[in-house]
Image (cartoon, rainbow, N blue to C red; front, top):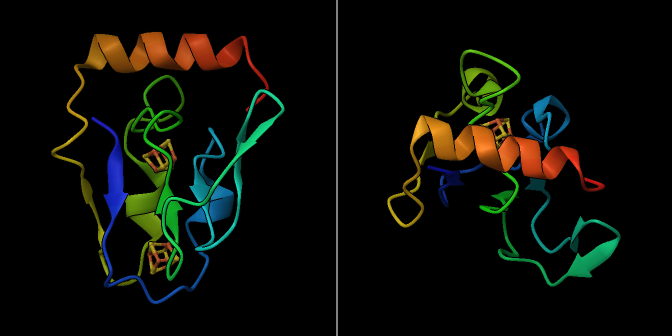
Length: 99
Ligand code: SF4
Ligand code: SF4
C-alpha cells in the first residue's frame, strides 16, 4: 500500500526530505520519475506519488514520513493496497530508475 497525505496537512515540509524514494512533493509541484515530469496530483498541500511510495520497505522498518509528521495526517491509501512482497518489488524496480 502506498501512503496518502490528507487535507489536514499544514504544509510544514518535514516529510519531504525524509523520503528515500523522493515520493513526496509540495502541492502544485511537478513530480518526476526516470527523467520524466508529470502534473501535480494535489495543488494545495504536500502529496505522495503512489507509484514511488514503498511504505519505506527496503529502506526502513517504518514509514519515515509518518514518523515525522507533526499532525499525523499521513495514512494508508485504501486505493493502493500492496503486500510487503509487492512493495519490495516496487522498490527494486525503482532502484533501476532515476527516482
Ligand atoms: Fe516516502 Fe516512505 Fe513515506 Fe512512502 S512511506 S512516502 S516511501 S517516506
Ligand atoms: Fe504535511 Fe505532515 Fe508532510 Fe508536514 S510532515 S508537510 S504536515 S504531511
